[in-house]
Image 1: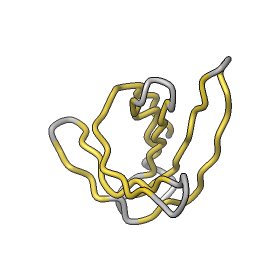
Image 2: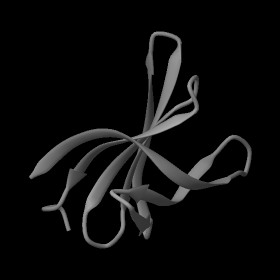
Image 3: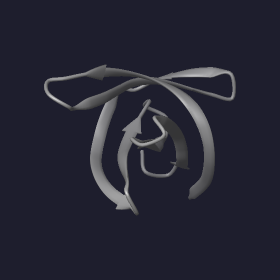
Length: 84
């Protein structure tokens, strides 16, 4: 079951090579989640804003993290606990 969250979160990323970003951990509900794998990533535009989406897992659930490049903010969009 996919649960919509849409909360601002703090994310640790590795930059590079080039303009690539790779999330390695994120904080949610006072808990640090280590990203074990980025399973998929894509991008889309909302007006002039480029949104980078990352489907990641910590081994217990699948999370969708979204980076707004214009605002430089991260949002935890959703959690899917049934995909693993």
